[in-house]
Length: 78
Image 1 (spheres, rainbow, N blue to C red):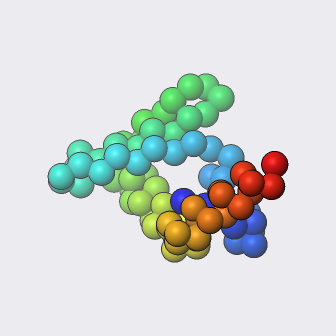
Image 2 (image 1 turned 45 degrees about the vertical axis):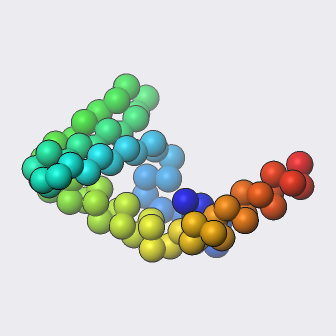
Image 3 (image 1 turned 180 degrees about the horizontal axis):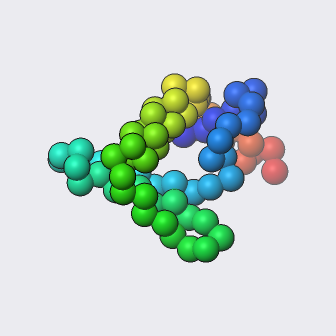
């Protein structure tokens, strides 16, 4: 997924976040890479925050096809 620069800055842009969805929401896991090493926030409120943030990122991201074209066009211009 490619988020265009036109979307502006957003919280968490400087972090790597892995969100693993399980068959039941209680088993969902978030891993956030930080300068101190990986962190695994597990409180339901924290998980809900990351779910909402990633949903928002998906809404502003380019479509899969547009993301592919963006990457190809930029790779070809190197």
